[in-house]
Structures are given as structure tokens and as C-alpha cells.
Amino acid sequence: MSPSLVAMVETEPAHATLIDYHLKKMGINVQSFESGQAFLHTYTTAPVDVYMISDQLDDLPIELVLQEIETLNEKKTIIIMTTSHLTPYQSDLHDILYIRKPFSLKEFRDCVEPLFLQSNCV
Image (tube, rainbow, N blue to C red; front, side, top):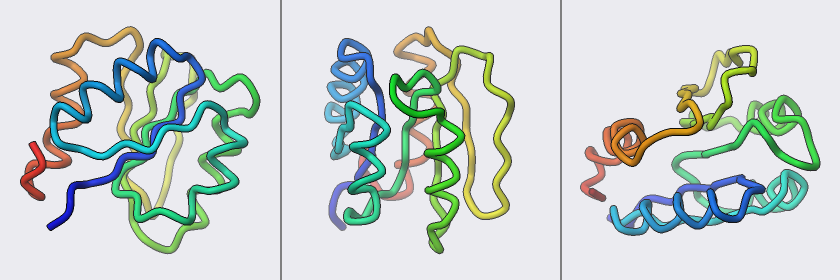
């Protein structure tokens, strides 16, 4: 089985670098997007297992990004990296998880690892 793929949408370069580094240490492939627009232009072209999306995108409200993902016919897991001001998003199709910023490495691993244990990626 090939390694899992996470599509990460994070506009803060330091956060993106840290998350990317730790996901790759766990054997998970990462496709990073520096803006919501960049993500929306290509998100349907890769076999993504998990979406990680910041609620503080510079160019788009996260609700718009989530609405686009909602149109996918395949069930996905979406991790929203939030500052707690986001109204909880509901989906009938996708699994939505939240991780509150700032989060520790332990909190990050506790959120992410269970998603990939079944595919032997961590």
C-alpha cells in the first residue's frame, strides 16, 4: 500500500513547515497549499486521504473551501486547524475533526496518528 496523502491548506509558512515536517516523519506524504485559491484549483486531481485546513486563510473564508470539499462523492476526513472562533461545521458525508491552535506536538500526533494507523503509515 502506498503512503497516505494529506492535502494541507495553511497560509502561515512557519505552521506549514512544522506540520509538513512532522507528517513526513510519520511516513505521510503531504501536498501543501499556501492559499485557499491554490487549493481549490487542484484539490480534485490528487488521491487525498485527509484534508488539513486552517481556519485563518488569507484569501478565502474556510466555509467556502469546506463547501467545495463537500461536493466530493467520496468520504474524506477533514481536520480543521482552528483558533476556536469557528462555528462547528457539519457534514453528512465527511468526518470533521478539530485541532485547536496553538497545539502541541503531542496534541497533533494524537489527532493525526489514529487516522493512519490502519494503513500502517505511522
